[in-house]
Figure: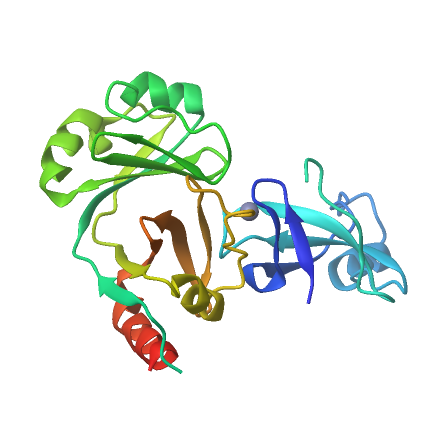
Length: 84
Length: 165
Ligand SMILES: [Zn+2]
């Protein structure tokens, strides 16, 4: 179980949050990249062995969206959101 | 096991959901509202009005249901300035009180939040989970008060009965 630091509420139980997926690359201009790069942007999500940046929604809390860095090997939150 | 608590489901309150920058909300409604709560997840009181600061740029005003009409006339939810939002939500929440020597024990079954006075101050109010449902929780005299969506009211009555049976 994670204790996720919310910038508004402080540390809260993981069960109050909904996982919003890893933070992906910024949307490229589809006319400026190759088809392969565009397909990669659309379909490949970050899945590192180690720290990954993730979005979480404090749905059963204050409603804030936040991002954390979580280490996939240890499940530790290695960097919290700004202001938390 | 049974617990030494009194559990009560309450009738409707007048509830208004307020959103916007604090300066704009207080510019519009400052004459009616209690003082602006300073800390996130805290409340202020003015007479029979409670104001809950429950999210960034987000408050809930609670009052006795008899004051709903007068408050609606003062806050003008339909005609408020366009950069803020005021919505009458009296019908959306149902409130419970859990009071007595073992109120904290019952709440510990229901919620993952640490409600010990060391962590959860007398004037604290926050959304968290009660039996897995989004719920607004605060202290009240001798115990705790919480609110869930009206449609989950009967379900929570059942959960509380099973918890304390
Ligand atoms: Zn929060």
